[in-house]
Length: 151
Image (cartoon, rainbow, N blue to C red; front, side, top):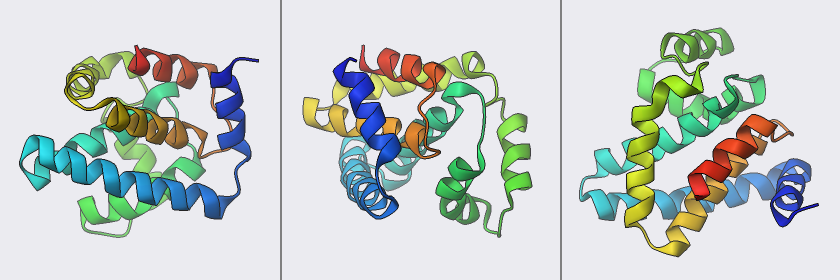
């Protein structure tokens, strides 16, 4: 088993409290750094949201656990209480079920990754991997997506 596969397994098996603590801390650090790079809080948060949404969409599916992970952000963005059905509709309407169709967002993400420190890049990749693992399984499509992000 490779180190990458072992890391995926650790994240898949991690208890919820530890998982959430890491995601919350890394998210705060990454958002703060992205705001500094973009020099605009809205742009920094938008770039962060792109990373998270693309990680969720990496396998072309939105699971209920992924939805629950995204729900606070969705409620804030849409300024209303969202249901899993709302999120699925948005997911499909935005074409996130077809990962190849959001190449522009990926190109922007890769541009951002190229401008950040190695430590921040590691944190972004870890967060994206954790988003992929939030439902208890990192699929082969998600692993491929993460590998492309790393390269």
